[in-house]
Picture 1 (cartoon, one colour):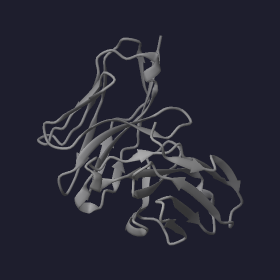
Picture 2 (picture 1 turned 90 degrees about the vertical axis):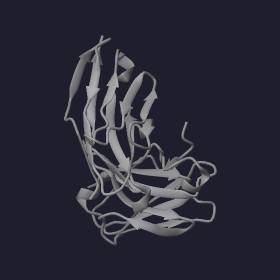
Picture 3 (picture 1 turned 30 degrees about the vertical axis):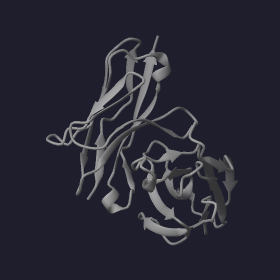
Picture 4 (picture 1 turned 45 degrees about the vertical axis):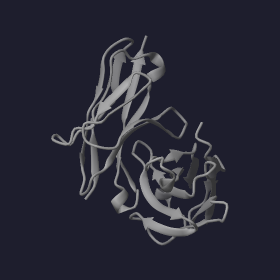
Length: 113
Length: 115
């Protein structure tokens, strides 16, 4: 079946530190991979996505590369800001199974000044 | 901004009662899906509606039901509420046949507390 496993948090970093949040997946088909971000009290917002192997998604300084050989989609940012404090969710979707999204449990990030 | 709107934003119900949550999809999106997000967890797929028909369902009991209307808005109904139904209920819309891929866009959610 389909599933996502992501690094447990919480993660606390100082401003301008390098961020990595690990995400690995299991899929029966050829999924698309996503990172969503959730700010306190809000719904999920799409951060970036990649639809096939070796694609790199990027947005707002965040990047993630679809690695089929390691079934991974790790999220990275070179220099985090206080405003990046949020919960980050890795997700996959496989249109062949009806576009149901499978989410990881989320990683809470706190950036301190 | 996603354009997906949900109502109500917060509500409190008593165990055994019934609740209806509403969602308006983003303009031009014909597919709506519902997710349950328990505290500290990732969203779990409840079901999806495409052109007014349910076309996918997660591991939720039949007391979770839904509707989609001709304007693509949707309702989630939960009967016989249980304490464990307390969660954030998220609606997401998409339009897979419009070349936007399979990205889904979420609303702000409805917080349901069952007491």
